Image (cartoon, rainbow over all chains, first blue to last red; front, side, top):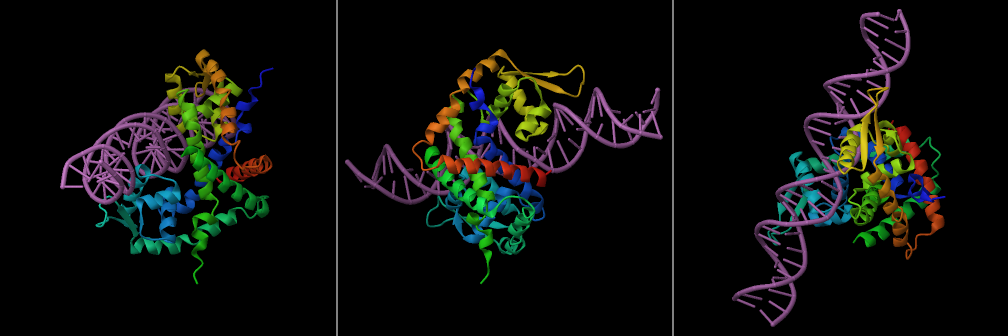
Length: 150
Length: 150
DNA sequence: TACATTTACATCGTGTGCGATTTAATCGTA
DNA sequence: TACGATTAAATCGCACACGATGTAAATGTA
């Protein structure tokens, strides 16, 4: 008997991560559509709402993304007048990203989003205690993966 | 004091899922590159290695993907001579996907991949017991998300 | 001060994901 | 048996991701 079961989807942890991530994005989509945002755009704004005036590099460190992904994304947010990209005069290589007033104001609209998402889970059997463990393991996993893919 | 901490990345479970999923794909990339496969292509092959001769729909049910994503991906795998797409004669709407001999043979090369991935985690502090819980919660989460995004 | 190296961002090409729509075939039902 | 509804893929357009490369500015060092 050949033990090919190692190759079954159920026995790997890669696939469920991939599936859960995509489904989560899909869960946010209708809520974010009201703000005319995609999920990655929402992430960038969360980073800036927490700390305004960051470089492309700094935003990338928070989200684990690089300029090849961020530059076009930031340009789209700039076109929506939510932020402004300015090349630093001190170091011409650096681009600083700052929220516009419109971008700052959008935070008020976004404040209710976490609540809306949480509400979707209220009638489910996902135990908060398990979720706490889940959250911790997820971050441990990320740390390991960051090291292994560096 | 405004409680904007609900919007912090650390307090959401959406972001770590997104990050872990991307990092995992990156972990597989160099290993899959030896087989000239992308990660989603590898997933499709895993589905077919487990059960050959499936419709586009059936593959999509396994991976939670639809024809708009699968059709181009399957065409690329067909170009690589790993599988063949055939429109069913019984029901002309249905396309059946079958591995070629080359596709079947590739399974032997892939059998060592899970082992290689596992080996990368051997020196880490991720407890197998925690990972078991993690895996379970992940699948529960997927079930809930599937329902909520249906 | 020259100049190789490093750094920050941008650009390019390829491959997903996915909402929306299209096309063609089949099904259900009057 | 007509014919509207449903179904399976495909197509289209847009927005990521990301490896590889390019460009310009800053840095380190002889």
